Image 1 (cartoon, rainbow, N blue to C red):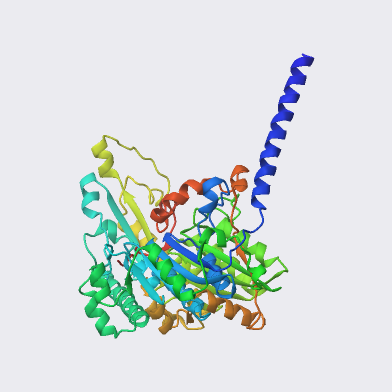
Image 2: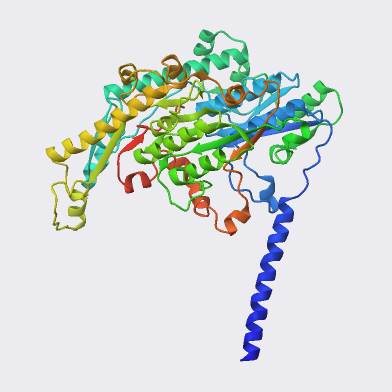
Length: 575
């Protein structure tokens, strides 16, 4: 028995020692010194796929260490650093298959334009570029395309998908009630094509986005907007057609670009500096940080109530439980001088967005605050921003959508096809109002509509109070209608057009920080490490993160938790 206990204790001790050794090694890896940047370097800014707002999990192991995903704030920081870093002589932009909205694209363009003020060259190399890739590249001094490549720029389209016929085939009927004639979230389940209201909004959105695309190309390529419109009617373009049309400057291979850059700089061999490597350089080492700290709080994804144990670092969208904990942490941090709340959300649960709105207003009374809208800040994402603080949006931000919707599927027909039946007993007049086996009757529909209308009036009143307008002034702008940022600015739903630079300028003004003084940006939630996953923090988010592009707008929990929704009616992807 003694030998058994001794062996057991020894085994436990060895296991603990082994874990401590692994943790120590990982911590040493995380604390590695910043990499050396060679003189005469060119920053290779590679942007591809989804560029997130929220810092993803950091895995500093082997090849993964060189694949760190930059966030929107990282891109902003990198270009500020490159502008003042004497070791960095130029930036070479390589956008490829970008899968972001037109708000983020405008942020990247603005960051590149700001970098150009340093006088350093900005070259762009395109690889089978889409309209998004090309849009980001338009500020470049010179745009390069492969000799056999093609420029897939051909205007824009919007496609909405409808499932009514499919649901009819499987015996599913969806009943949807809403407040606001444009709050057509349920149309995808109940119609086979756009309603007149949807067509009106989509044409307005498409006109705005296409006009902005034309204007940016005209600005970058020094062309007349009408000439650009005529040119886009001829797209997509083979490489030689893009060159002849003045959309690119050279047809070259990538190594030839660096050869031409080297000759332009006339300073010897050019060293390629990767994005992942340069991200490890701290802004403080270049004098870009100050003693004033600005919190950058990111709210990204659909709004749900969340788990009480969530600490705000999950990848499962904006959870009221976790996000409110971050708001409270910032509010109680005496070192934080101001807050920029960065929102990229189509909305979500009504109660959850209201809970966040409450905590946002509490923080607003404690700290100078500015709202920065990303690709979307609509419905519940717009509601949570109603603190009365300045709101900054991009021209292409999707916002507004001030409305409420409730939807319920009736699966009785599907159950019949599957041979499933339900027998129901109830107590209470409306006990079956949320059953998936019965349809909503007139009394139930009236009951729901009363609640939806009350929720809608509350939404409009919140907006009116925040925007310092009356209910009657806001209500015509509501009705569930989605507005672009530029349209919302003209109607007083947001204050200014701009991005991170402007948001930080405004929060510095509110915090009485001199405009010329650098500030330290503290990200909330911070970038998580592999250690956070090992010890159980936000493990669930790593799998869901793979599905975020598909679940961002309408994750399943919005339909499974019940309640009314403040959510944008559709996911807009203008191609």
